[in-house]
Amino acid sequence: MADKNKRAEKLYDCIGGIRDDYIANAENYTKVKAFYPKKLLVSLAACVVVLIMVTTFSDVFLKSGDSSVNDAEISLQYVLEKYEVEPTEKIDLFSGKKLIWYSDGEYREKVLTQKQYTRLTSYMQSGFEDVKESRDEECLVWICDGRGNVVTPYLKTSEGNVYVNLFSYRAEVMPSKAFTEYVEKILT
Amino acid sequence: MDDSVIVEMYWQRKDDAIAKTDEKYGKMLNGISMSVLGCREDAEECVSDTYLTAWRRMPSERPMYLGAFLSKIVRHFSIDRYRKNTAEKRGGGEVCDELTECIPSNTDVFDEIENNELSKLIDSFLSRLDEEKRMIFVRRYFYNDSIEDICKRFSVSSSKAKSVLFRLREKLKEQLEVQLYGR
Image (cartoon, rainbow over all chains, first blue to last red; front, side, top):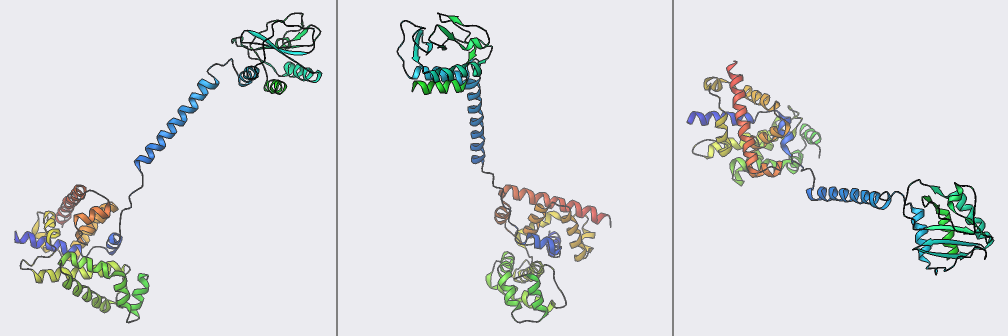
């Protein structure tokens, strides 16, 4: 036993003779713990997940959930309903230029100036888009020239006018943003 | 102050070389000595002896690592003092006890081997370790750090520190056996 201790002592002494650089390296060494706060990482991961979910939700349900409805159309319907124009009991196509629309199962109208008529007709003929997808006919618009001629977005793709009567057109034809904004300006 | 400047002061025989050494390394040297001796007065004496030895050995020596150079001296003095002080005449206490596990079975060869050769074998063993394990070994068996100190310094649990040290001792024994049998 005594020999064993003597040998351990010898080993202990010899450890005193190891390389200086090993001693120097260990002299002031303190391990710096890597800072990975678990809670912070978990919170960040949760934020990313929520962000992805919100983005996906808005893409799926607000934009592409009903692909037949675009921003401009939603906006036109919203604009036409926002100003709460009284429904018209009898449509008269010979009493001046007017914008007529059908929504909530009723017709409404707004008398137009020549300038408004020209601009709206221009927007309607150049800015509407045939999305070629069916949708509910909730919001249809016509522009009447006061002489019995009616212009609808549908006429852009189908030549000819409908005389003395409103013609129900394909609701797939969508209004442009410029048309909607101008309608809002007229109604304001 | 940079080590090379302090060493230069020894070489220039400047009086304040020891004061500058004490300023930079005094606390560490006292710590090493205290961990061996456990007695403040004895530790202070050993540190003073260390400075005097450093003064005598420089200018002939120009240590690259002044801290390591002084640590070796103070450790040697402290162990020596401890052996003189204690009845068992054994230095190192608990740390030295642990090293009994490292003694190879071919004790005759072990007994015959010169200390400086044995130090080289230990160097060879340390060179094969990764840096952290090497430092754990050096902190425990050179600097006489307690397990608690190692846990704090290396940010490990007590059981982890003990288990690492146990494996290191086993590995040292294996390597010493291989190297001593080859002689």
